[in-house]
Image 1 (cartoon, helix red, strand yellow):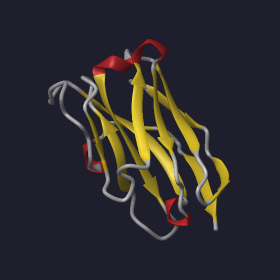
Image 2 (cartoon, one colour):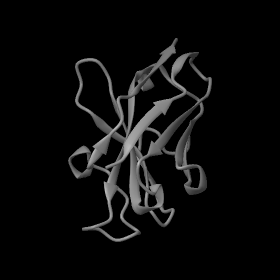
Image 3 (cartoon, helix red, strand yellow):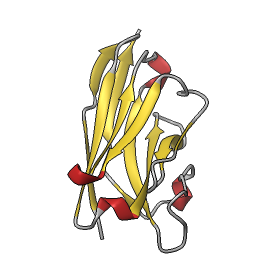
Length: 128
């Protein structure tokens, strides 16, 4: 089992930037595909960005060009750099991982249903 802890959330003005981190412990992080998801009040959890075990990335259209996901397997950490933030980006952001036992190293998770373990989330608030 792997434990995930997100950090880096906070309050930022529209147009600003934040970098979220997801630190993993318990297992080798390189054996997982990683996804970032978010959930705004009253809305369903949605995909934000994902990175495969091999480093392939994919983004939701709403964040494409503004967010960048990266992974540092040596540090057991995945990051999402969020630039040009908008009020509609306000949400609790979660990282989650998918084991590679049933998918290959190029698999990029895009659905919350595909994930095996979740962190508790970090709140991002973007003021207008």
